[in-house]
Amino acid sequence: MHFYLEAFCKLLEDNDIQTDIMSNFSYKNKKQYLPNVFVKSPVKKVINLFISYFKLLFAILRLKKNEYIILELYGIVLDIPLFLLGKLNRKRILVDVHEMMALDYKNPTLRKILYYLYKTCPNKIIAHSAKISNALSELSNKNNILFVPLFHYHVDLDYDIKNLGEDVINVFEHDSTYFLFFGNIRPSKGLHNLLAATELLTDDRIKIIIAGQDIFNKLQEYKESHVINNNVIAILRLINDDEMKYLFKKSHATLLPYESISQSAVLETAVNFKIPLITSNIDYFKTILGDFPSFGKYTDTTNPGVFVDSLIHFAEVDIKEEYYNESDMKKYYENDKFEAFIKDIRNL
Image (cartoon, rainbow, N blue to C red; front, side):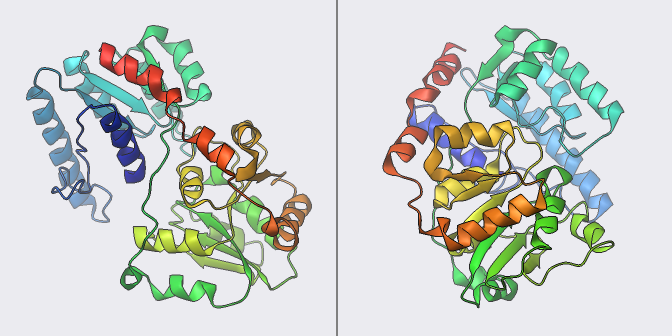
């Protein structure tokens, strides 16, 4: 999520609001503020969690005049202490909601707790999609909600080839059309729909790259009852930034067969690299591609025959189209859509 946070900071700094990122990665060559809690050792994970929450408490207690803290929430159990810490300073702590409840976590108890915390949250809440904004409005005071479109990424396109794994470099060894399915693999991202479509592929010149951590073992789950087509190239691990840039620059299109989404970091990354989008036909993508048609096309990804026909048609015909025209790009990156949010921040 560091590209999201950096895009957020850029927007604020472009409007003369000084920012800093207190997270588990370095920002502006400063030492990272928090330890990484996403480690394999359960003991180290718990220790790093306690350190992180303590350092946040310390930062809250040291808040100076005209300083604010924005907490990032993802709809997971780690959010609960953040809500409680946020109540220590209701006026100068905001919460930024990516998902009210993480899409692929079905724990009903966690949902009840999180929704209760949103309902009783005394802090201003930042929302980026109509879906989240509407859901929050049903739970809490509408005046507490600050709406702003998702921040657009500005990722440097250059990569250091020394940081690329051999498995990533070897992907593009054939004269083929490459489709990239990128990011942490979750059930809501429609991997099974993509794999069902690839079963119908007979053209070896079409390659499907699946790159990211398979934290729910969705690929293995599919393999237990199906045969994975040789057209599929899977790199199931954490992909570093240089490898991500390499994959996006070398691929011909990005696949987003998602079944549900509130906001998409992968879409933002693809737009940053001007890689054509092939998405599912859920409302989120239909709205974006309706507003910016030169970014790509949507299709029925739940129908394997229709989905594979879209891939074949892209490889044979659509690949020659002009994507990301100047008009759509200018409209997409225009700054006036953020003016209301900046005004809200200043009014605080």
